[in-house]
Length: 315
Image (tube, rainbow, N blue to C red):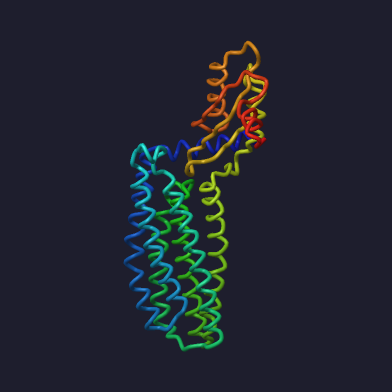
């Protein structure tokens, strides 16, 4: 099972490393931003004229989507810049920061929809069902096109997934608005509008929570879910000749594709430390997808860091 997970991660990493994949993702996001921004104005006007919360909620969502998609596009552009003396890793993590921000934005929108829906339940207002249906149907068509454009990209990218999440919320909002308009036209039951808006908000809350957790884990430099640091350390100790102990190991991800690691390796007496370091790096890359590793070889009985901490009284 671990082998399959490593293979899948290696495939994703290789896919995201290809320049044409990144360029394709960037182009898809730019097209999606243009379409979303254009129809957002139409839907906002339609929501005001018809009095529909579902349309206004979707228009508000599309407004934040336009900003989110523009930020996602900017993140792709900026991440292409090389590292500097201050930003030594480059700007790749900006994509994760944008994905995290997108998740928080969707979360805020969903909570606003729920709060507004409660007010609509308490004080129902008349809604022009026919005009609402026309605008919502147009919105669904635009959102389907945008969703298909983004869905065709490489979804291993958290930045692209954040953009897809926003558009998915728009698509669900359009479906809810259509359903509410049909119910209002058939029965005259105005609460259908806020009720279906709440259902969309609940779906958005779940999706936003998942995106926030995944991008937040990267920003906090936690070990990726598919990598067990202890298993990796035991694998190195078992597979690398001359290594008797792996400790002080940290594994994290720079963005959604670049795994990093630092570790100390105690080598056996008489073993070649340089050979051990080289073998460890090769094993990390080939078996675990960790292609950027800093390895410190030790030959003493105790780790120098442990000795120093004891001397400082912090051990």
